[in-house]
Length: 462
Ligand code: PA5
Image (cartoon, rainbow, N blue to C red; front, side, top):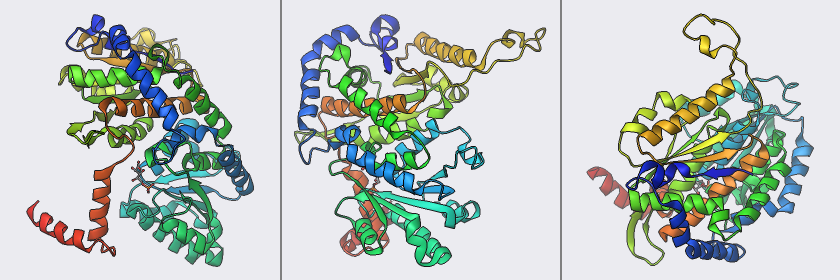
């Protein structure tokens, strides 16, 4: 199982002003945390609670359909192109980047065991969209369009461009190159998919985009490129069982939630830096940033009281950002918690050859890159401690499907518990929706005429 070490946030280590008396706080919050965990687990099966993501690891039906389809198309396509944005793309990107060969898309088909290359298009940069045709043979490309709402403007615009190109290249057969992952019943993409006869997968009700990675949103792309999705769901289920424990001293998601909440409200640490010491995990912070920012950044409490809460999540990658952001983390405003993610066993061990012994870099000779990575992570933690900066360390035994699933699920539960501590709704995103509505108005969508009028007035002012 993955583990959490929070000693770097203890007041005995970094002082009362910047750290917490963690054992005492666990005791103070024991019953509040137990009540939050019990409440989440009681509400998770009820409709309209936004908590169905807590059941995704157990969906045998999804596993079966995804595996069946992946087996059916195995060997047929050279590329999978995922169209989506936010929660419809970030989890897939984070997990595939972590689990596939680091240079997967550069390997030959044989080296990829006949599985396709994979691309995520999560922006609408016209140069990037149009350049896709330079690298993809569309006849050999399976396009997985993913949108829970079924009408997200960016995803639908990408889809319209790709559908048109596919149809021009493949004629009527283009349908076989499209899979739509969307709501079971509602939304424009569902309607189009049914009219056009695309293969579809669904995102269950009450699963928000940023909590959807273990639905078909993530599982289908994973299976298509040969990732063992049983290993993924086993990781989710085992972590879920562990996190059902209402005792805070035995529940790492609750511990991390409480530590971050208290470091924010008591010590002013309102920025969280997620810093994996692993390039394979470098997109996990991108996924986490959306999860944390959209869930916790809120302006009204559950009781309807005005508030402005939510820590700002940031990304750093060890060791790269030691040479970029660390100076700020050490000496800049003391308003951050650094969350390290450490890997106990890398898949490979790279020896540094015994050369240049008699020069200034002779100390490296005969050591390993692995030792260097660990030494750098330890040094960074120690330096942050010297500057009284709080840290926590999440340790993963290794980067594999079982443990990355545990990591992501643990962070989801952590954010749900933190939302309850801030007393806000962690499962909506009203003002992100507002921007979507303004965009519809600007692009002339029917029904948004009033928004368009007031928007034009605002735009003349700002
Ligand atoms: O968490 C969320 O619900 C959102 O951020 C969505 O992931 C994002 O807006 C994309 O939405 P959709 O999947 O409906 O296209």
